[in-house]
Picture (cartoon, one colour):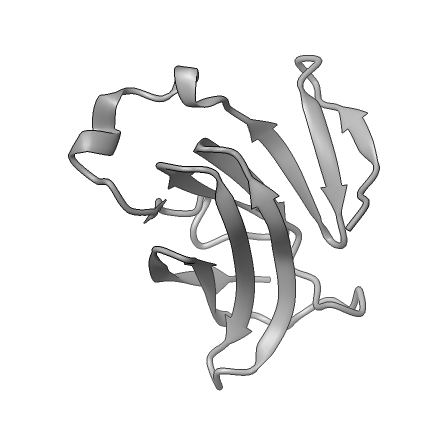
Length: 130
C-alpha cells in the first residue's frame, strides 16, 4: 500500500497510515543488543495507558518482515488495523487516535493491540478513558 509521508516535530520522517502515524522508524543500528536476549518480536507497553485521546504503541522487530498491528475491542471484534506492511528490523512507534476504521470515535473501554508477524503474535491490553 502507498502511504503519504511527512515530517515529525524533530524532522523525523513519518508515514501517515489510515487513523495512525508511524512516528519514528528506527534502523537496526539504533537498537541495542537486546535481540540476542529476545530474538522474537516484542510488543512493549503503550503509553499513556489509560489514554485519551491517543496512545503510542511501541514494538520491536529483530528482523525485517511483514507486520500486522490490529486493535480489537473487549468483545474480540476488530476495530481497526494500524499497520499491515513490510517493516525493517528495529523499534517502531505507532500512534492510535482512538478511532475505528471508519474514523468514528470509540467509547471508553478496554481495547487490545495485537502484533502479528511470521515469528509470532503478541497482544496487550489498553484502556481508553473519556
